[in-house]
Length: 282
Image 1 (tube, one colour):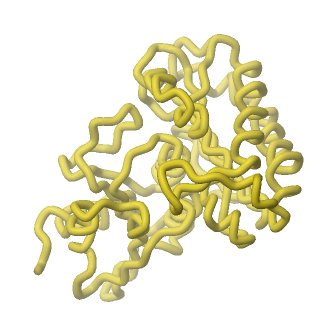
Image 2: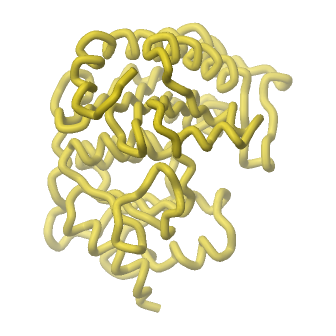
């Protein structure tokens, strides 16, 4: 078991490749065979018509849960579908044991529609600190990885988020309207202003990757489910970016964040987005 964050280097050196192999195998055996081949009985609704789950989600998570827990004895797994079935499993994020945070298919709507904008996200955390992350887009054959203090990489090449070009409209991906309450819509409407080019987000994991690559300037999200953000936030951090909630604090995977929150290419952009959210110009 990992007893302190300093020992993560040893674990990743020995098992980082095994984690990657498990993610790739989950995609190869459970996700891609169902991509563009889903039968009606393999797709269900959770909270409503915009909140979908498929057999690919369930089976990929089941496989990853077994593999990841075996790689790190004593660790726990917080997976999106397991938490839906038993919300108490989410409390593992508050404990002392290392936790794997798993989103088996992020961008399920895109997956169901047969689009390639979906990914599998895995993060390793201990006592609320993100230690490592993996984001795999199997239909695009892209793998992004990050380890605390060691940088962010896409297919082995170092990522640098950089900073937005001065004078250009700020490109921001916001929570999709289908997933927001009326109050959240009003809060996020603050970024629809001069000097900003907002759009609804797709897969959160791929939006975080776009920030880490410098293709997107920032995100503004209104929900805090750890599986949607953990892997991407560490990737952005290690690429030189930052994230803040409306309280001016870094986002906490353990919850109780002042929402909405933003992740951006650099600290200056983070402050600009937070200011917009706190002081809407309308």
